[in-house]
Length: 456
Image (cartoon, rainbow, N blue to C red):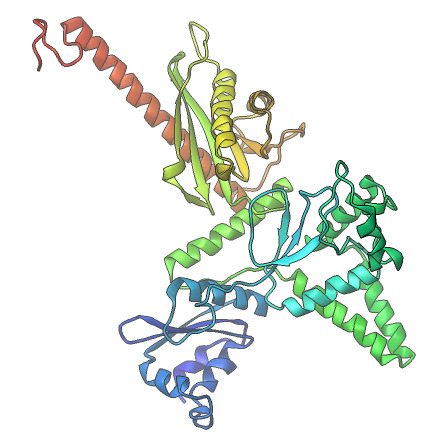
């Protein structure tokens, strides 16, 4: 066996097999990288796995690897890499199949919990992905049967304004057996049902409270009584719980695009945690203004998708509002810029960002609130004060101050600096154009003509 394989760590991760040209020919995951990769080179396994292994081995010239925080982490990264590189010897992942998420339909008056493979931006909450979907399904059934958060299991479409047909209610077995809180029949109030849905959301976010301790005690109690079947139910529950708690934290892989993408994901997760968002702020738009004593006033917006600049969605606004004669008004300019962008979004809701970032402090918060009121819509937003790098939330009196080097702060500062640069560049362009126009007017060179009116 090649002695170089001894450097492989005994940790979960993903291994990347390359040809001598450097082409990725196979990607795999492992609970233990060292043990898994060494299996490929054991003579006893060479002809026991069909055509793939004998065909693959002669082509392997290099094996890269990336260690991961957990087996689940390895599963998620393997899927991502296979979809991106489409290695010849991989079959799993080429069909576009993805790992499932849990979807909490908060857009409905009476939310349901569903498993889905499609994530659609909106009011619904998504949790995951969960590579081991079977144990997650078991956990959800356990929570439902134990009445920890018994959300309705039906697919009926009803709301507070549109009641469900009584005939459908009467045919529902969950209603008659008392397994469902039955909001359709008025057995639970809207407020109490939403509290159940929020309880489930908190649980899926990882706020388990003392449930782990309680289940552990129940498992031990049944085991002491030699009720091993019931003890096994609680043991499986704890196993599923540990799977839900795993965070996807990926180690370094020598591919700049993948490394940057995973680092940006960590930054976005940290930002969501800091400002209390229930979803990843994958689409962020930031606003800033620029002017010179009120002249050539502009507002600008930059767009970041998954932590990366998206130049196609950058926007520039010539300020139309009336400003003070001897100076500008950052408050007025910010309100106009945000309001005009909101109008664009109302015409094309697909452009709706997850989060808006304002360059400034409390005054800019007020400007944005005015813009939202005028537009008749709301998008989560924060402001970043340049003086002390404090993060302001709309309803908070004090700013959030993060330590230097915090991933969330680094991301916000990068976006803020980018929109600041973009606004200044556009302002200077207009100012230079105005100065040239003024010079041409003095010299009689207007609209590309000389003083005699001849074309230049």
